[in-house]
Length: 466
Image (cartoon, rainbow, N blue to C red; front, top):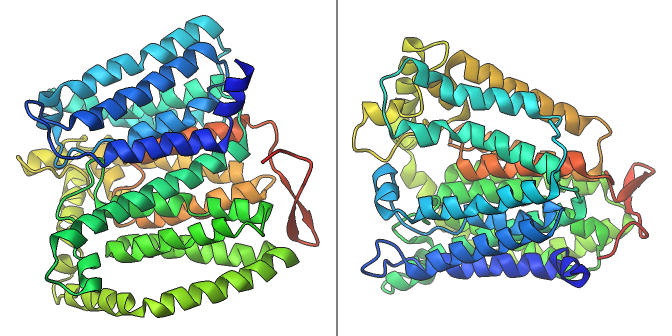
């Protein structure tokens, strides 16, 4: 069992789980008589099996991070909504089986309840999710989405009570999340490429798939890439001579540019600028030397593919309209709707189906802005809850600021900037990721693997293996 535990703690295990996730996700066509792809579902149940076995046999829940997080990104059923999920049935079956693992773990290991540093903010957000149900007309569809806030709280409490944090492991997971997102975007681009053989090469790359990616749309991919992008710098600061990591760092840049997501570029630009500034200000001589080599290589690569930037600029110019609402893909109208909902329900909001009820039959139920979503769906109470959550996150990260905390903040701020014009903070995968990341941070016995010497970070060689 000890050898298996060593394997579960390895980068190879983490990479294997995310590779299996990508393969399972790549099966997207329905396989009759099922209203979904059978192989995609087999991937889901495989991840649940791995997750359950680890929970049954091991006390430290750190090792389920790859499988739990992979479950957030494995579904590839296009145009899912409330009705199709109910008709498919298997998500509820999978969810039921999934909960077996945590229940057995709690019974067997009897972990001590740990409220956690971020409990107040996450708890208040959970309450803000369900508060509108008190006075709104009953709608069975509102129950699952309104309960999500409490689910995030339960996930947070479970991990703070059961995980023995390890930041090196967490940053490995973050890097492979980033690579998973990147290769899902590349798969999306490849599908568009093969579907448009009549176009020139670069236009074929930019043509896109013509569908979403199952669990998300192409815009969503960008803020997850931005959130996890700084993880590469963690390993570069550890081993600056490992040029594979430097090379991998180019891939998310290419993915975001080719995605044509204007909001995605804004958020990701914040992450890139933050990473560059941090590297320049806090990198030591070895880092800066290898950084110059990488910069020369990167400039050469992007110069060779400069036609892609010209085409991106063309698409951007074509998207400009005299009507700002059209330029924003209808967001101004959505924001105005959200404001009207807030005026009608200023204290606890109009609930999570407020936009859906205004536009019946539409898949749209998010207001495409963290601020508007908070006030429209959860009112002033929801906004205050979110402010308390932000305060707790930034306070924890600012106290005894380390390299690891700084890199997390760069990605977190970048994704929240994207959230000004898109659904980020309240997206299910994002919320789950954040509560897990925070739980690992606060339970990690070793807060950093680096030391500051003359205001420059140096890796402490004896701190860890790998």
